[in-house]
Length: 429
Image 1 (cartoon, rainbow, N blue to C red):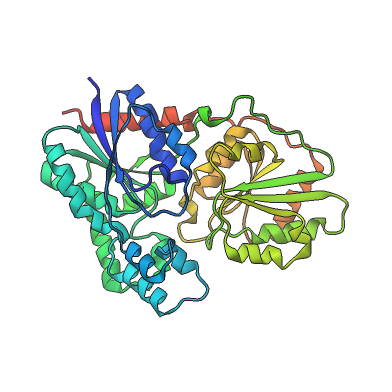
Image 2 (cartoon, one colour):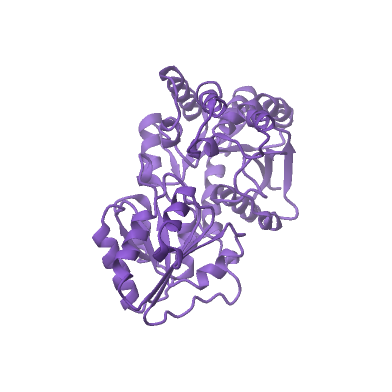
């Protein structure tokens, strides 16, 4: 008989993005490793990106418990008569009225650790009885939002069930908190809650070596490393990248471009390198792109003709864009947490065999993966000449399409076996 593990996650299809794919894929492969997953997720969440195609990937026999959630920004949306008003979007607005400023202050100082905190008590009340009945051999919480960990913390205290906390981002050291007008007292509260989670969970895991080291320093305990990865079954049958044509270079970026992911150095280097040539260079942004970058392109006639914004597409459709690329672009963050930032798409990029050009810290965790797998180049954001040289080399050469080395360790099936091992080690008794 398989052991059952309850996975508490805010992000679940039709939500899009790497956070949802991490646990969707673990749920897919856990039964092969002797664990039956049960998903606990909000019935009516408010998230930025939707990818309804991911709902087709939910295993037919998977039990998914959807429980109602109330989020304060639902009330704010009614007042503003807008459907999209959570703090991440408010912070990106150039013009903020009194109501927006008040909402950001409330988010920073009253909603601790995040606006999903009102889901904690009702979820604990609902799940306690199930846990006490012995329905689950283990519970996993994944954050952010870090309120999910508070559910795990209370369930552990009430029932003693084995609990594993999964940190996809830092908590008290998370760069996002630095953007909020938060008091020192509330900062301390975040640290206290984080330490309660780190000290109480039976096991803690995270997605990158840097985050692992940082959490180990905080918690003074061993933290498990479980990166994101790629699923070979996602790659369409017959997928084959195009052969590069002489005198042409098509760069493709997939994902979000926001205030902490800056492609402008790349855009400037493109223009500087290819303005007075007959060569054809194009850059396609697949996904949500900030207004700042759109305006930068719009104000430059040369860039307007060469930069495309097809918008957000389903996970399945993105492979069509990969197949049209001569180079896949990765824009890493240039912030406090940058060294530990490993975007989920890096592994999918590598699986295509298309060369990668990344802007970021050459000593960061993403750079180490790219370099060790011989999958591409990583250049600092501020190394303008280095970006130009890399673009010139890519234009002038015939990039070799090859599968990155050591890729098997990042397959979703292989990573799920590592997860099952963590579960097994903590539920032996």
